[in-house]
Length: 403
Image (cartoon, rainbow, N blue to C red; front, side, top):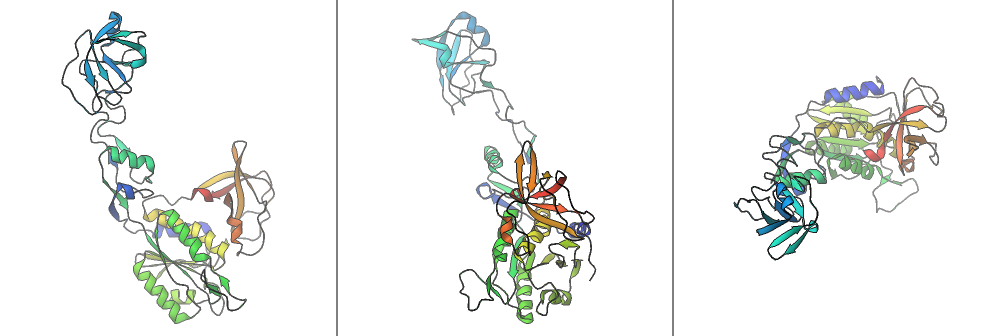
């Protein structure tokens, strides 16, 4: 087995992603969180005509010196009049109404007194006051939302204002997670002996996949039987873009996943990484589909999923594969545990204008401690060539809250 560096494994994965990104059209009320696959360009000015920004009276600016103007009528929002305003007159105008042709200023209701069919100006306003000019919101031909944008509430509002009912987005990659091991039970099952444990892997990784923008299918747990496991893997691969297995990749007698992968017609992207946790991770590509064989320990499978599967999901949905790294000040000395690239769960918080990382409350031990991911947590990256890191050093941390 040829172990490669973490940096090489990331590079190999990115270079392997030549899949054609597939677009689909969805209604905008279903587009939240999806990735836009086209630029959204304004087809007209907004507003298309000078518009009132508040309730008041549309006037000619210079007529304020007259002190008193005759009310020609009113113009509620949503109505249109081709009447042209003449000197000495005004039109009662409401928020969102088109400004009457010939007017250039809106004087607020609060600045006048109404006497019969006239207004008496108590306080003058500058020219153009409370008039929204043509194109204040956007101009015809302007790119309002760029391809690759993750659609949020503001994007949906802008799309609606453009009268766009459906929008083109990248198709969500389909992900299946198979947790393997004869010792694991599904949530809700009862233990029949003390050696059995409840599997958290499929729930944790499915949640991460959904958060990254993938569609997820629940698959049953798989026992340590090579032939039945092979069938589960092949069946799941048939209907999904990405298949993730947990367990069965190490060197034990019942670690069958690695053997099944070797027997498949697959292109190996990574067959082992100088990484802690997750050195036995395997990534293969079968046609245009991916299989990630991750460790069985919950912390290890979670970390490797974040490092490899989330970037692939991002690439398949038209995004950059970058993870949300921040620079942080390390509070206490970190003792390097291996000659590998390490990722250690740490507390990550903001203090005096900078990110700070520490390990208060984080437990040391095996890669089974998933509780280390609770709270405002980051993953501290310790490079392979690094030794111990002293307190006060600037370090790179993946902000897990920003995934």
